[in-house]
Image (cartoon, rainbow, N blue to C red; front, side, top):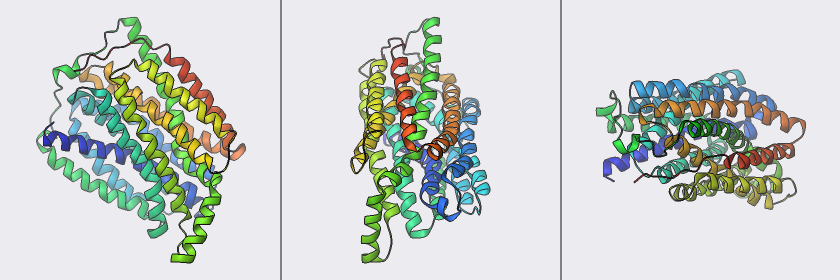
Amino acid sequence: MTSSTKNYFLLLNIGHFLDHYFTLIFGTLAALVLVYEWQVSYADLLLYATPGFFAFGLFSLPAGWLADRWSYDGMMTLFFLGIGLTSILTGFAHNPLEIGLGLFVIGAFAAIYHPVGLAIVTTVWDKTGMRIAINGVWGNLGVACAAVITALIVDILGWRMAFILPGIFSIIIGLIYAYHRLPYINKRMEPKTSSIEISLSFNRDDLFKITIIIFLLAAIGSLIFQATTYALPKIMEERLSFLATEVNQVTYNFIGIELGTSLIGSLAFIVFTVASLAQLIVGYMLDKVEAKYILACVSLIQITFFGLMLVTEGSIVFWITLGFMIGTFGDIPIMDYLVGQSSKGENRARVYGLRYVVSFSVLALTLPLVGYIHETWGFDKLFYLLAFSASAIFLLSWFLPKMKNHST
């Protein structure tokens, strides 16, 4: 891989990091800060984030269509600059309605990345299993850092800077990306021949079958992903609050600052970061083993640890959350791999866009569902739902047709 190609892949990975980072800033702020500062319930705050996730899904399809018709690199430049500027403006919100509007526009720009960035990754390079996994790890690091960095910024600079500073960073990266890809900004990408061939030889019945299964898996997997990633800071705040109280006492006595919020964010960061490494293992296995068997194993991990959350308490909760997040993150590259391997290069961004319309529409619906379940019954009922959902994925995995990866 040349230096230019490495830089290209790095910038795409940073984009995936920022995409997930921006969409989860509010999750940490709502759970740890705004619920107290604005005196609005956690469930009600989640409602203001819901339109943003609908935008995250709704705009994926037109973003993919425009990328296929105009330019992948042009759309990626728009992603970096647009989401950065919008995040800065959202930092000046004075009420939930204004922040909800900002989150909607952030979601619209965030919708660009998955259909466009993943289309680039699966079009330009071969051996897509591992490359999708590496790209996925960067996305999950964005999830992880959204919790810890947001919490740290809140403790030191206040919640508004949690939107403004990442926005400035994204604009800088966008300018670097535009400079790096300037000759290609207004050109359609011509895929390598090897990347536009359908690696998997399906007959019409198999293709219809795998399409239906992929979209069902995408919907159910999105529910699990959104519920776990968005609610994890709140889950930790409730079940590990005794640790935050102890840290607050120590840090206030020594340095005059309470860092209990940062502790919860740090624990979430550790869980997200370590769990994201599961994608590397899954990515490696996707280039070696049938995808259906890997998916079945991942769903069994989820079922096991969601069940354990119902019968455990105390510090061990940290390890249980790590277990179910390993399963949750391990599921992600499998879905993207299936889409990339079963779609033609010239339509790939649109197919990814359609996949993410389904995924992120479910993400949006999941937020009020999580808020309602938490307010009505607490998180225990949520883990019943998640265990049932993981069981459905396990059953669906066995209906996937057998596949062989012919990539070189």
